Image (cartoon, rainbow, N blue to C red; front, side, top):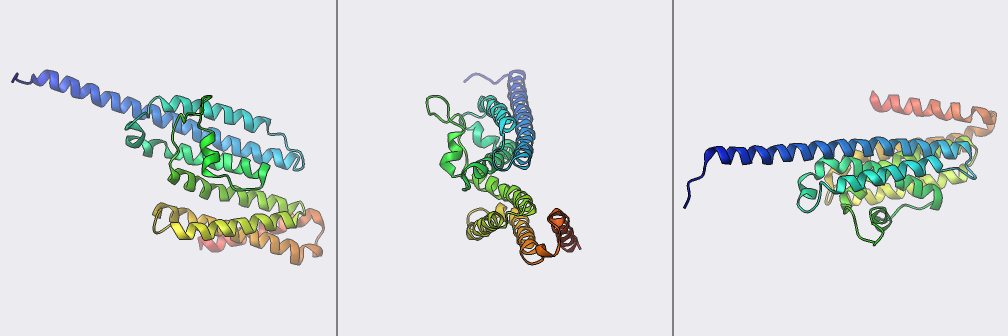
Length: 241
């Protein structure tokens, strides 16, 4: 048995560590870029529906989505095989943010919650093969973040006088909350960190709907948003006190 050369051993170890750190830095950078573009996609969706709720132009959102998919294809190179699990914590944030964005986009078009299979479809190549697998945990956590965008959209909808549409969103948020309560402790304990924000979103939408339905007739239409915002600010102050 040949004696191990210490210099060779340390050189190989250094190369392995350097390769690991370089790969991790690339993954983190791409994930941050995905997160940033996903946020821009969400903002573009909000701007589109506020500019024309009946016939929104999603051109900017579509462009952001194309850029994000290109980044995921770039990410896929570094997370093949065991590297997917080894570096999952470094890119899960990007996954969750993108799922939040496409879930909101899906809701604006179809008025339904995006399914796991529909999310998977975004990560398939021309041959129908997955370029990157999507963990069920990232899907659920992305949906949890999506509820915050639903809340913001519902507040906007109420301010335009579409009370019935806002109530549909409110009931959907309540259903998601019930479903999440079932899995947060037994299956996905990290979801509990997001449940507080979800319950806060539900209360804001309920308060906005109440303001419109009960007190809306007392004020001119252009004052709805101010009234609702005052209730939001009061609720947030109570939460922070």
